[in-house]
Length: 414
Image 1 (cartoon, helix red, strand yellow):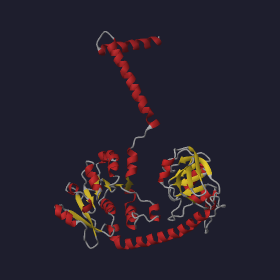
Image 2 (image 1 turned 120 degrees about the vertical axis):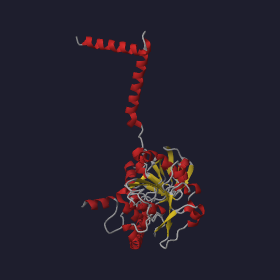
Image 3 (image 1 turned 90 degrees about the vertical axis):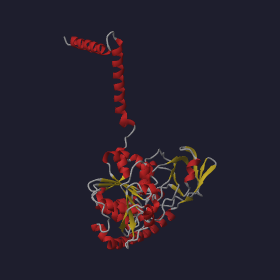
Image 4 (image 1 turned 45 degrees about the horizontal axis):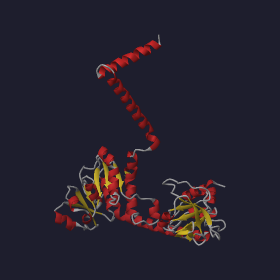
């Protein structure tokens, strides 16, 4: 058996067919009893989970990796705040757990976490999907059977094929229409040499903007990047004490003080040149440039602006894009956005990665620093005692003590 065949077998699937699962052990006819444990994901770190526990998770479209982590802990049941599979992607996780005889209950809702203390030993999952802590029902979900999980898997495979086909068709259409923009920068406004050779920070997430700017302050202080605010995020820049160099987006979504801060305003425009919000700019007497493009994303335009004008690195403080977004048809995962990120290539860096570089760890990693500080304090205390403990001046007392120590050491070697 090849390595790929072994991998398929371990997940309960075979080439060219649907997943193969064992007996439908999820159709339990008796309650599952165990300690209730709030289990976190592999990505954010695991909490303790013992064999026979009831794991409470919040993981929509449970992945194979996460399922394997749960299987390694050998829970008796897994209760999901959301759904183990939504039908958007054919995920193996639920099938792996069912095949191992783990009872699965889904859709219990976020309120379950307030109904028990982590490690509560009187947890119980009933065959009807009810979750109890002692005699109290704390959540009601739905038992996921092997037949239902397999049916969703097959439906998701068809859905994924259709999604990817539609995405590819839209991407081809966008490239045909916007090839001059993507290849030669046709339509990108001329902003001179202000960006060339510099790092650029694009703030596109107004909701998390305040926290992002606070965590990026050391990066900004060190490199003084060009600051581009996307629509309402430009207000966050100004509120954080920074004047944006550029504002990209609909000016109706930007505060008056920000538009008058001295930043250059770039308005997204339709291919025919019409720009939404131009009247507001004219009423305020603020100059602006238009950026005609087929994409409706102001963030995409900000990234293309920075890349075209020679930025050495572009830090995006906004929502990251993943392949899962494409598969699940997230509204931000458009062909224009995917192609824009691909054009930027290695220049594009997520803000969270920069924040991680500037974060100082805690715990044992700083033990040496506390030890060094303690040593310095001890030495300072000894010097003070010696300096004020003699009959002479502070300096003479230290010198006399040092000379005395030197003579003592010399005597050891005679």
